[in-house]
Image 1 (cartoon, rainbow, N blue to C red):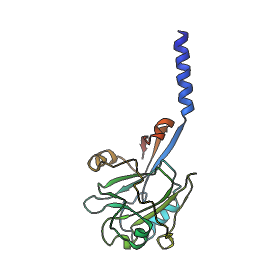
Image 2 (cartoon, one colour):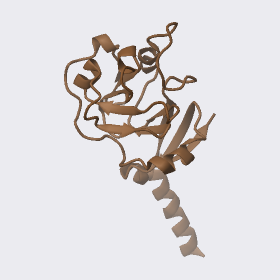
Image 3 (spheres, rainbow, N blue to C red):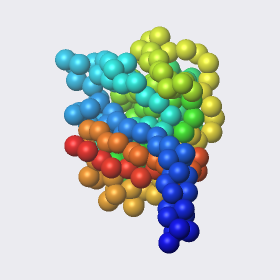
Image 4 (cartoon, rainbow, N blue to C red):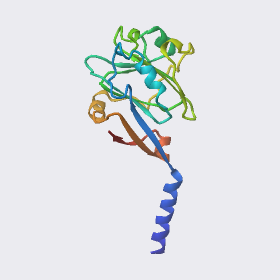
Length: 191
């Protein structure tokens, strides 16, 4: 009996030491799907990025018709010139989730020719302390972004459609300390 109580106490102590990390899932554009900005709101993605305080562990959710659009992660040079060749990451399943695993600048645009020129692009910066800076497309810095993928790994395109479809505007991921170190979060989506 005494050993059982001691084991339970030690287990609770270890669990409390791990801590918990909250991560958010942000639908890019909020209620709007990923698409060409309207003439009444041409800077929607610039405004959106400035209104969200992204941090490590958060995810960006891009919602769009997979037969009509896609999302690519690109370098800053490709972002500024709307060059769609050689993307860092290509997502085309209609429910694309990009996980922020390290600080830095992240640049995204539509993978469809001509849409980047119509301001269907997004730039966010995430620093190690969780703060962010977002520039408008005209003010984006000329420094290059990392030339390596910045996600947890490859995103299974077919499986992601089914599992990501219930996502709405926001969600909360609760990660235990050990799981966060290995980049695994259990997400409870609200909305």
